[in-house]
Image 1 (cartoon, rainbow, N blue to C red):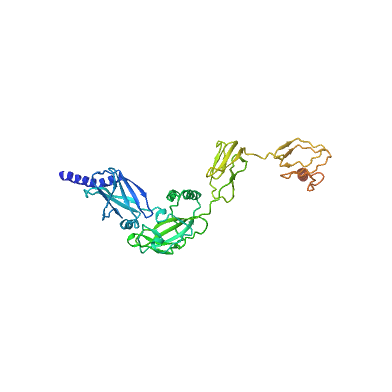
Image 2 (spheres, helix red, strand yellow):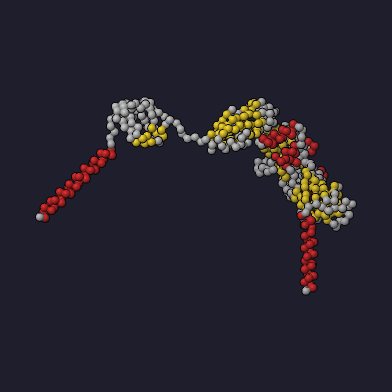
Amino acid sequence: MKKTKVLIMVLIVSLLVLLIPNLSNAAIEVTKEVYGNNGSAKYIFKGLKLDATHEYEFGITKTKAAQVEKWHLITEYSETDATVNISGGTREFTDVITAVDTGYITIRDKNEPETLVVDHHPIDLTIPYLNITNFTVLNNGKEFGSSQGQSININCWTAGNSKAYFQYEKISDEKVISKYKEIKAKNGDFNELKPLLKTKSPTSNWTTWNYWNGYGGTDSVGYGCPEHQINAPDYGLYYMWIYLAGNNIKDLYGYILVDNLQPEIALDSISLPKTAQVKMGETLTLNPTFKPENTTNKIVTWNSSDESVATVDNAGKVTPKKIGSTIITVTSQDGNKKANCTVTVVAKSTDSGNNNGGNNNNGNTNNGSTNNGNTNNGNNNNGNNNTGSGANKGNTATGNGTNNGKDNTLASGTIPQTGENMFIFVAIAIVIISGAIAMYQYRKNKDIK
């Protein structure tokens, strides 16, 4: 019995030893702040229990099972937080960044090295696409040389056996273009564009860089140039996608924005039709007219003054809700130009013309009068008596429209009554057959006598 209790206690202690570090890690929160174009980032660990009188250090590994080989002093920490600085310019960190997307951080008390505050906690080592080089934006026509100082630098990369590829992709998203222009106008930080930019790279159509040196010696920098002179295919704003690949390293993707935009053309005015009509159950799309037609910024917003009557979406499509009127307004992005259109919602209409389409005409008598061009579209004429000698000029059943001339396709005189003649013929035939049968029976009876 005692042996059993001892065994159970050993198992419990072993489980606690295994679980306590994991439970400790589970309570920790980590946020990432990228601060450079070389893979550098700060990782803020929150929810720690630190002694303000002690010093702390960290190490990074490629796997959870690997042991930390080198420790680095933590300079920013409080009793609950610690900031781990991973600099992409440090060879040790670069070796991890180029190998894996997830690294593992261990933090220990420098005064008590056996005390682990954080044990192999995972961190995200991926680099935002806009931050893999020393450029975020290039002007079209930019020239490069073959030295590191005259090239595009990949500061988080060191792989002599690697290759570099590129391709252009035109940006068509007006929100990205508009935000780019806004940042450019105020000489701001283009990293503000990150939430709007693409996060999925192309899978084909790559072109090899004109020059590439994947290993920059002790600086942990690969450098080169896709083209000696940047040459976007056309006017506009472009992604210049970059793809790096090699042996025993991960693939790295990113981009530089290439500015080949035309000069701004200001918007003078915007207009809409003054009025428009839409039927219930249908939709109407309003198309604004810009002056000049080639104005640079054609981004607009739409608004309906009474959404209970009709709504309008961001493409100018009006959807009716009930009969009535509402004012649809289109506004330029800067808010300086506007145009209005009064949209009236009407009921679904039926064919209410002068043609008589399918109605019964009961008992109308034409006594010698002239019927000039009335149209009968499939009417049932019950009891129309034509007893006079008047002329019937152009009374036609033609489907649509009225014919006021003489219809030469109608024969003159009385129309043969096919049904009556057939009835008489059948009656005569029955009488003849009945007489023949009667005569046959009479002779037969006479012979018997």
